[in-house]
Amino acid sequence: GLGGALTLKANYKKGMLAWDNLIIGQLQVQKLGSGKLTSGQTIPFQKTIDELRLNSKVGRQFKGSGSKFSFAANTSVLTQLTPSFPGSSEYPGPLLSNPYDTTTQATFLSPMTMTLSLGIDFKPDSKLALFYSPLAYKGILVSDGAIAALNVHGNRAGKKSFHNFGSLIRITYSDTWWADRLSITSNLLLYSNYLMEPQNIDVDWSSEFGLQIANGLSLSLIANVFYDHDVLVQISDVNSPGGVSGLGRRVNLTQQLLFKYSRQF
Image (cartoon, rainbow, N blue to C red; front, side, top):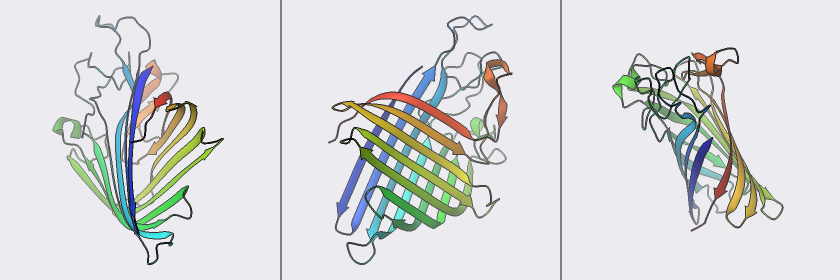
């Protein structure tokens, strides 16, 4: 496998006002074998993860600068960086290239999931933050009409957009040990749509465990758990060609082990 990740953070605090921003980009690919497809083309790269995440939260503390509660507004965006192409029973996707000359399965802004929420932020200490919004919008945009027609990204009836209104909970936790050489960062997002099947909770949970090896250089284990009742994912099946048997509603789990270099500005 081959891949990389980029994380950018920017935080601003003045008095009772705080503004936190986070951008994460990840792309990882793998190649299983070095031979040829039946078409004669070289086996392509499969994508194991491809995502771009943006999150911004602005909050103002309740009366008194020492309060642990804040009024807050939160915005998040999730999309991917490069086009994805479906594979076949011979070599399943998503693929980085298009050896089978098929319709693009996904690309930048197709799909894009965006949330806009207003609520209360609770920070009992510097490690833990809980944000609850009873007024949360979640929209799915599929800007490419051909991709929208696939109906696999949470949109309905081939439409380019799908709108939800509901309730959102975001829990973030971070801590360090051993003179800051060991670290953990975890972010859990839960969403319920008031307008359709509110009992089906969307889950997006990402965690990173880090070990600092040298100044700026670290080893990280990243895990992401994702479930959306409206989004179809690949079904793992060891008895099927390529270990995949179509698309369906499943919990999607991805894991990465990365060497990372970071700097603060």
